[in-house]
Each structure stands twice: as structure tokens, then as C-alpha cells.
Length: 408
Image (cartoon, rainbow, N blue to C red; front, side, top):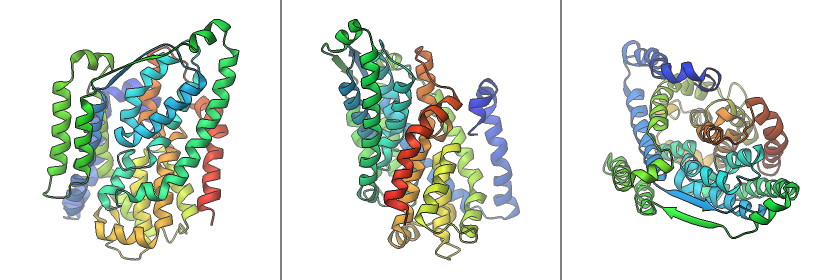
């Protein structure tokens, strides 16, 4: 699922629903028929509903907000734009913020845009920026659904987020300044002119507020999901077709996400149970080990199921066979957060930050790449992205995070 959309794109677009169903059916058969144990399927179905309600609502609402930019940006304007995008990702989600901001980003840099503009947008807005809240990135919301307190993430992660964002933004500013100085004088004079910004669809901020408020609703059952989906429906109905057209908005991306994650939620059931039972046997105990193991897998698999896999592994440290997998209760999770906070922090940070190491580490990465290519913007290849940017730029940041926060 992680590699086929990139390696055989045309075949994948035609056949991914059948393949996803084919991968899920054996697991469904195993639990429902062989084990006669529908409880894990029921629990994962409820988690999937909550997950898709949030992701779908943020996708629809962000698709109704359009930003038009006239004029070109200096390196300082670009830096402030990326910082604002990273902060916004914690409310719109990394996918929503990427969808709203990537086109203005391309337009404001159109006279001197190059591959590093696309890559740093992915690093900051599509990944690292969304590490502060469960709204920011799917793995953190899965943790919230399993019982990690909403504000626990920002309380524990903000120093790491500040360090990572500061390093990435600082490096970007140096490179963009050099790029700006190499531009012809005519372009540099254009880019010092006043930029004009126009915002459309701002009424959708009201619906965004409804979604954020709904996250905290615990009872009655399904009220949270109903509020989110209701806000998304009203957003779609009250947003003009012109705005949706300007954003190239359609439901194809969220349809693919819905189908893929239905299969992912089912197929990771046995993996979660196995991981919880064998994490201790394989010597995964310290926060540093969790940081690197969860991070490396997040870079080559989708980071949401990877987060769940290692949350399950962390729960296995308790030795309680009932305290793992998708049946992990909120009580078990709260106890885990209290007893192993450094491990939960390592899993949270690594699943988000390492998702930027490759195009397939996080869904918004491919979304931004596709939009940039349609806009005729230079984008690095898979290997070019990894060797020219991830290794020399992001990897030192990840190593420093480990050294200062998880080495012990």
C-alpha cells in the first residue's frame, strides 16, 4: 500500500479498491470465522469511524478556503509563511494545511521557485508542523482515540517542536536567501514590492471551530462523529463552486484514504497483537529504541498504523495481555502515559517527524508533489528527495532530537 501508488501509479489508481479488499478479507475471515471473535473487528470499526470523521471533515472544510496571492515573496516573507503554515497544520491537519497553502506558496515564489521550495514545504507544513495536537497528524489522533489526553501532546512535545521548526526554518532561510541573491535584479526588485492577499471562504472557520469542539465530545456515542460530518456537509453546501474549482477540489483523495485505511485498520490487527507480545522479547524497551524503530518504519510505511503498532508494543511492556492491540482501553493508555511518558513521547514525535523522510512516509507528501508537478514546479525524484534533502537536512535534525531528548 505504501509503495504501489508510487511505483505503478496507473495500475494502482484502477485497482486499489480490489487490492485493499483482498488484503483485508483473510484477516476478517480469521477473526470472524476461525477465532469466532468479532470484538477486535468491532473496536477497530469504531476507531475507523472516528478517524475518518475527523480526516474527512478537515479535508472538506480546508477545501473551501482559498488564498490568492499577488506579488512575490522575499526570504523573510517565505519564512513567516512556512511558520504560519506549520502552526496552522495543528488545526487543519497536515493534509488540510498543505491543500490550502501549497498553491499560494507556488504563486508567491513563481519567478524563482525551485525544488527546495517544494521540499521545505513538505518538511515543515506537511509533516513537522503538525506535531503539537491530535488534530495535526493522523497518528496523534489515533492516540487520542485510544486515550492519550488531548493537551498531553503539546505539553510534552513543544520543546522538541520548537527546536525542529527552528532548525528547519533557519536552514531554509539561509538557502532561500542565497537563492534570492542569485536571482536577476529585475526579479529581486519585483519581490520587494508589496504583496496582496485575498482570502475566500473564511466562513469555513466557523465549521472548523465546530470540528475542534467536537473532538472533546465523549458522549453520547457517535455525537462527536455526527458533529464533524455535519460541519463538513454544511461547509461543502455553503462554499461556492468557484472556490472549490480554484482549489481543484474533488473527493478522489479522501475516497482513496477511506478505502485504504479501512483495509489498514483491519490488516494491522494481527500485527498489533504480535508486536505487543514480542516487543520485550526483541529488546525494545528504552525511549531511544522506540524513537528510532517507530521513526524508521514511519518513513517507509504510513505513519498512522506505525504509531498504533508501537503504542501496542509499549503497552506490551506492562505484561498485561489485555492491555494491547486495538482493544487497548483508555484506562490502559492513561496508565501507560503515566508509567512510560518518555516512550509515548518518543512514539508521538518520531511517527510525525520521520514521516517526512520519504514521499511515502505521510499522505500529504504525495499530495504536495502531485500539485507541484501539475503546476510545472520542479520536484525531486524519490531518490533525489531522500539523498539530496532528507539525509543532509532532516536527518541531522532527527539525530539532534534523539541526542537531546531520548538518548538516555
